[in-house]
Image (tube, rainbow, N blue to C red; front, side, top):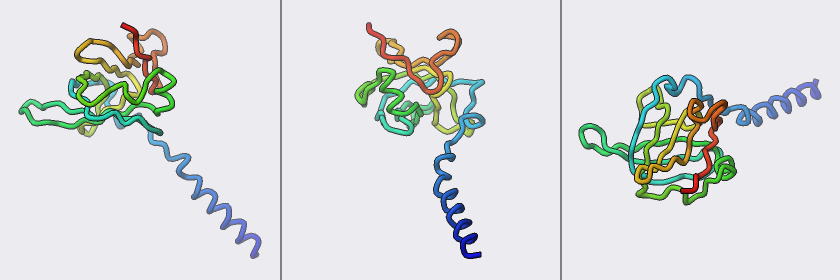
Length: 150
């Protein structure tokens, strides 16, 4: 009986400790892919990290009030393989982002699927996962288009 209890306790502990491995959140249902938004603003910070990178940027709403946005990208590892660097976007850079907004209306975008980032001053596209613009398959899965040479 003791061996059975010890085995059950060990198995339960192993399952509980491995739960975070399976805890990855899903994209579906949280973001409105059918109605992408276009937001132009000023970069506050590029958080180039794993498991997800983020662009924090600000713009002004209709009343002129400053609004801080968060745009989620893929991992730093994935972005680096696609040509991104930690200094790719700097505080003060003006950007336009097209992508799905959180369905709860918050200033939260997910750039894993069907999204685009454009440097507002030059018009240079630094990320494009919009399948219709990329042809079959696009750059989906959070992959960013490598920086294009001008």
